[in-house]
Amino acid sequence: MKVADIKKVGVLGGGLMGSGITQNIIVSGYKAVCRDLTEDILKNTRGIIVNSRFGLKVGMERGKLTKEQMEQALANLTLTTRVEDLKDCDIIIESIGGSDAMHLEDKAPKMKAFAELDKIVKKEAIFSTNTSMLNITDLSQSVERKDRFLGMHWFRPANILKAVELTFTQYTSEETLKVMEGFCEKLGKVSVRVKDIPGDTGFIGNRIYTVIMKEARLMLEQGVASPKDIDTVLKLGYGFALGPFEMGAETRDPRQRSGQG
Ligand SMILES: NC(=O)c1ccc[n+]([C@@H]2O[C@H](COP(=O)([O-])OP(=O)(O)OC[C@H]3O[C@@H](n4cnc5c(N)ncnc54)[C@H](O)[C@@H]3O)[C@@H](O)[C@H]2O)c1
Image 1 (cartoon, rainbow, N blue to C red):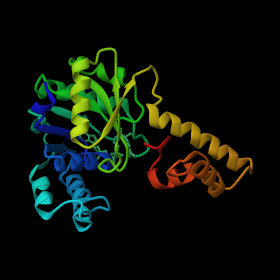
Image 2 (cartoon, rainbow, N blue to C red):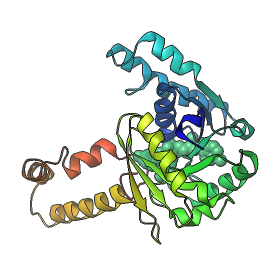
Image 3 (cartoon, rainbow, N blue to C red):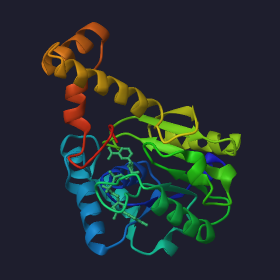
Image 4 (tube, protein in one colour):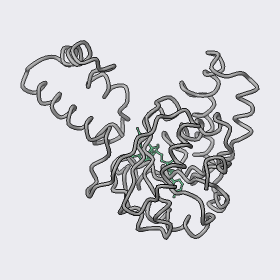
């Protein structure tokens, strides 16, 4: 497959991340089919895409896109509960949660979903996962198309933040990586390649973020400095856009998370 062959993208999971990812895709001129489990959840997905703080309406009001562009983007959107509707997608982006909000990163449901999709979706399609920390090689064991399987880790809000980590396993082909790099460019993203290593530790962003947060919290416990002062030193001393405590408040979901997500 070539980048120019990409027409339709399937997003599995229309939650916090899946809705932002879907929005980015439809605004970039691709058809997106977003699948979640119930019509009620999908109603919420549409609400996030259209009406949220980073949604299409606010974007239009701020002059980031015209009314026609918004209408075109929405014409590119399909929301469905039927997994079969993903069958002719060129790329699948899995962004499902776990069994409940306390276990956002569950290997078993992701493996089950990929195994099901592997039978349904056309053979040449590329499969990717937006997991923040699960080992990509482990997840790739659920499918036969291991050469067309990789991590595609987005940051939140997915339609705003530009970084994407493309995590490759020993099986991921160079062609797959090149297509995904080209696709990221079309979405206005800046991708980096990350080698998958054993363990569920995350990739570049979460690994570094976890260490910084651990040290920042320790300093707080030891009474070394206030959160504001720790943030100030990292911002004005090292040029961080946000200090660790601001970053935590800005990005962390109220649900249980071990890192930035
Ligand atoms: N929240 C973040 O900041 C963040 C950032 C990067 C990556 N991630 C990762 O993205 C993934 C999703 O996170 P989220 O915050 O969007 O979770 P979320 O709970 O907001 O959304 C997950 C959605 O997946 C749906 N779902 C579950 N099983 C499904 C299935 N078989 N088919 C279709 N949909 C299904 C749920 O109904 C839910 O709507 C997780 O792996 C998470 O770690 C999260």
